[in-house]
Length: 224
Length: 224
Image (tube, rainbow over all chains, first blue to last red; front, side):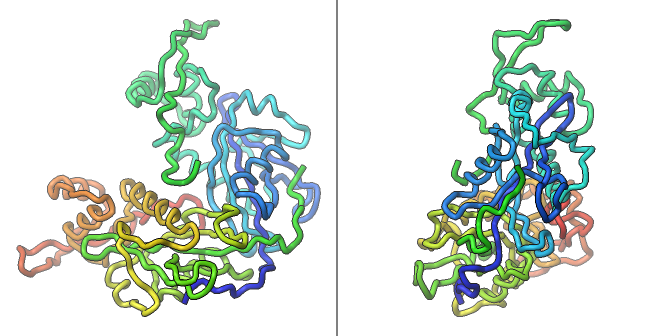
């Protein structure tokens, strides 16, 4: 037996894309939500997203709907999981969920009246199964920060080791020893020290930049 | 702006499930393919799969189509990735791809005339984008074997350390030092030694079983 078209062209299944966007603000992980203006779940907060156009790749739908609903252009965008349980919406909707990282300066520049940023530890009740989706995305973020350069997706091109440590601390929800952190990062080969320093109220701190020879996250043989 | 239904109920997008099934045979990783009996790609080898029924969860579609096309019940089944590029099929088809592990004895018992098992290093030309899908699944398998108990999905309930090492060797495509391997596995806490031994032409080898307190693979807050 091979793949047989047992359903008509109109299968009654609709395909959407939603995106969980993480940014960092004041040492906390935050995400933007949009308020729904129609049923189902009118008035509730939901992840930004939209329907997949028949002539558009899934990654392109994610980028387009992100821009349309939030004005955001992420520094990292990856497919997370397809959520398709029959009870998750009145209609049958399969949502291909992406997750994205946005730098703090980019997030602040794109503030829109219809979008509100929430601390991930203080989320309101969300529409559909979006609470479960956010929980899964947070789990992926916390796992991935351990074995990839994913934390850099929150940072501008030049940053101090304290900036980077603060990102790790907000993702992992715990304090890290500064000396140990410095040693681990310097041994990882992922950062290149620059000759510039940030000066201010504290003693000058060296600025670092990414080593672009190292990928932000290993995606394997998927197209980039 | 919130999620707005910009496409009619018939969006022209169909949703399918395909599954990459891995098993082990004679120290090699093998997978089953089915020969297509109709266009597109009539006569070519393809991954087993089928259309998602509107009243069926995605995981259920994966299990059902696996049983229908190959007769197989996997010991491990996980969603891999949603492939949905516009050019991958004459119609627009989004395939939610799963990957599964099947024990060698289960695979041999389920042999069907329409299914053929191939060494992953000697695959024929595949229909659609299934070659790319298999490449990605192999990459995920090789990554995951390093930080989870995924190798146990290939083995029966009781096995020797040599059995387990052979699975790792076939996944990673390289020989492992037996003494180092034994030490690492014994330190991991994932195996429980039994009082039974396998006897035969070699000296008796102790049989081990899984520690069921440790999950086969960490899936996070996704429903099980």
